[in-house]
Image (cartoon, rainbow, N blue to C red; front, side, top):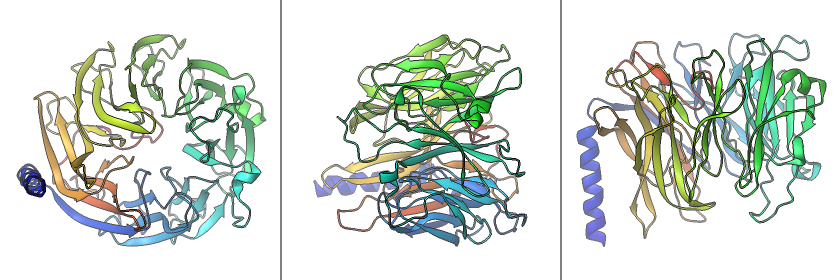
Amino acid sequence: MLKSFTCLVIFYISLSQISAVGQSSKWSTQIENANIFSSPRFADLNKDDVLDVIIGAGMEGLESTNGIVAFNGANGEILWNVKTHTQIYTSALFQDITNDGIPDVFIAGRDAAFYGINGLNGEIIWEFWPNKTEPARKQGWLNFFTTQFVDDQNNDGIKDLLTTNGGDYLATAKKRDRPTAKLMLLCAKTGKIISSCQFPEKKESYYAPHTYTTSEGETMIVFGTGGETIDGALWQVPLKKLAQGNISKSELIARDKMKGYILNSLLADLNRDGTADLVTVGMSSAIVALDGANFKPMWEHSFAGYECYVTPSLGQMTRDSIPDVFTILAKGTFPSYSSFKLIVIDGKTGDIVWQEDSGFNQFSPAVLADWNEDGIDEIIYVQNSLVDPQKFFVVNQVRVVDLENDQNWFVGPIRNGVSMAASPGLLDLDGDGQFELLVATSSIVPQGTNPFSIIERIDLQKSFKSVHWDGYLGPKGNGEY
């Protein structure tokens, strides 16, 4: 066994070295006592004209010095870190509320953790639940899920925060009676509640709410209910109704009688009628395109025996102008999965145009960009590989899949550990026309050993004319194509 394991590792490393020519790791920074489920987001915090990297981390239910960390985009040095009492898994939002010309950071996670942070120095401007002696859960505050700002709701000149609070992290899979989630507006300047409404049907939620604008100019909120073992639905309601404190007349978009909606829906005009359509993925692995004009299915797929935890990505993967859909399915039932299926669906027809069983514990979204300038996007994601099942030795590396030419290759070095749920980021950090990949991975360590995570910048030494999906929830950070 040891001999075959050694040969496998040598083969994997050799293949990587051959296929990764032309890309190099500019920097790699390790942080201790942290797992990463958050995807990296980017802003220039030190005014050096290089975008810096901000990410949520930490440990579930444990205090960590590295709950929120900002890295110097140029060299990987830690600009600042924030101690948190639990894990921070959402992705950062940015807005300057201190009037110093530097974006401030808004980010959230488990156990009522939500922070407004000074982007210059990492000082906490506000914290939703600062009371460290009284558990937030006893007061009805659970996990926060957030994706975006909304227009100023309280006339203080600052865009405010749309979020959900819900998801009982102590509930067992068989428990049916779950706490009702809240749809909320928070003041971005102070963290105070502007409005809070219970979800329809008194359901739980793990879905980060997001918005779109109708042809009449009205802002609508899309939100979801249910979980891994609880049925749920997708709903929409005008933003103004939430601001008024009453969402009782929310409109039903779709329903799943078996499991809930956890992943964000995506918005793109798939039928070219001028109205954004919704691409939805239920926990039950049902992938459906809903006509934005009437919410009737335009196409749908269901994959028996699979579930889905990977928020889809949109890009040009067929020879038409309509965006197509990429995601990853997990074979099995929460929390045990035996294999993972990568899948591409034609956004126009709903046809499955490519699929492949690949990887291990594949829960991270992909970025989509035209690597070789042939008019078709390549899939760029972090592939986890189980090298030794007995020792549970896992490695990961960035993989590029070229659908047009039926080829794939690896980029950058092999790392120990896994990409848990963090999308890579593809962007030009320093504005020199050459793109970089930012990758966040976490260790797998024996029980009783402190975990660690690694943030790495891979310089691709190439430009991109077309990047359709540059990171988690796309170029606008809210699921809009």
